[in-house]
Image (cartoon, rainbow, N blue to C red; front, side):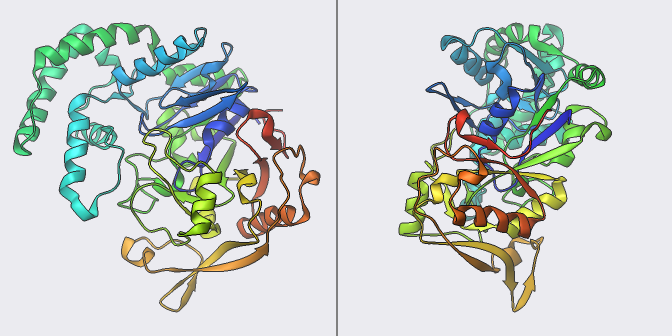
Length: 427
């Protein structure tokens, strides 16, 4: 195994940051392939807690090359704030490479994002209002600004003037304040000069690394169920977090991807609006939420929680090419008398094993459950599968049976040391 993609196999927030951080210690290159600073990775090691938003998880190791690939949208100001924050905490030796084809996020994207959410009213998506969607929209509309142009003074001035002319008209139509070109250019040209040293053709860099046998780890943001094409549309993100999207988002050939690790929680969570068949409320929901610290890394919004949904897991496996599973926050389930796993849906009396394409149908499905006995033992100190209580072992085996995928890693706590690898990655 030389290349490994780590994807969220639910609605995001599955613990990808910890898995990526753990596996990054064995990698030579860590690549963030899509998304922006609307997603957060929380990493805990050595008693220190770090919340990453857009910078790859290998940033803590000076020997790892960290790549922010062309599929990303990058907010220059906030990315530099994140980088400076890491430097202030002692992370000063690192290797960082930013794709010259990645698009940038500017303040008017954030303004438009917030306005669109407000106008949607009861039909809002539940975005973080970080400007990610409008930045991807500009990319599709061919009026976006790419990093290679952003860091060149003459092209930045020209493109910003052209684009701002269009965006200010949009803002005016929406009754929002407009941006002054000179003020925006003066501020962001400073960021451009600081970022220029990191910008290069990362597609070329990655091909060279892969062909010379480097171990490359690809990490994404959000989860498969938030994919723009295959997620629960329209309650999705503005890019594709699937394993299938990595070659396009990183500028490499599909043949270079050999394995995809789907990260899932031992239960299910979701942030924002949209259908959630196994959602729980009441005491059990609160128990899981508090034990799992289920609050957004970036927004601190409380996450919706529910039983593990293997219909969603199987769907993610199919559209993303997942051939390994990482089961996270397994310790959170200790103390629950009876556990349930959703294995199918009932839609108007028909038993289905996949996710309907429309929100109307998906909002009406009823989950069908398998019940399993829980366990009371504290499992935060186990170091192997054999150390687990029998009921905990049975829970993992049932997931493997329902998803036809091997649980190759599970986690029993937030620290790196509380990660149990059942199959060795990056041998």
